[in-house]
Length: 260
Image (cartoon, rainbow, N blue to C red):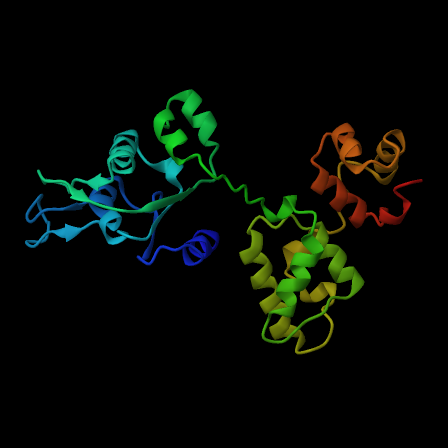
């Protein structure tokens, strides 16, 4: 959503930015939330009706998060909105024109969903213009830079001792950036200006640090030797992506020996 909002703000669109999490709304509500409804369209509907989020985004950007969780019937209705630039409220008979740009996001593999029939192929290609792949923190080669950048932005700038830094780099960060922010804020509160020690870190981060990677130091060096120091080729040989291989080298203190 942060990236989608930045794209909206940097565009020439002057309408609002409207975000909706398709996975968070119950199936019974998402249709009326997206498309709106006419007065008294169903039991419990407002007597004056309601404009849907698509109409509210008129002239601006509609961000559909977790679009892979949208049902097939709703996918068909959304496709019509994108193709015809008009929306039909629930219970209505007259369409309303809309001018929106749609940005969607999903943690699912939408191409795989198309192949298995749970996501419409025509909608997939309608949305599949510019694609940004936002990697999880565990797959980033610049993890140390990211941690330092977030630490420097906390209310009290914090620094990490080498043992504490090693434990942070060994963690897989399933909570991604939000988890790093929470850890940095916790350390800032506990340490009050002194360098962060391993004991200051959450227990699950400190405890997991001593666990070795699947590739031992010898195996990492052997992969590098066979590939003459080429990180990408060595990562393929080890069966991992380049960023993961780079991180394991860093954890093991082997970056300066990778040409050996």
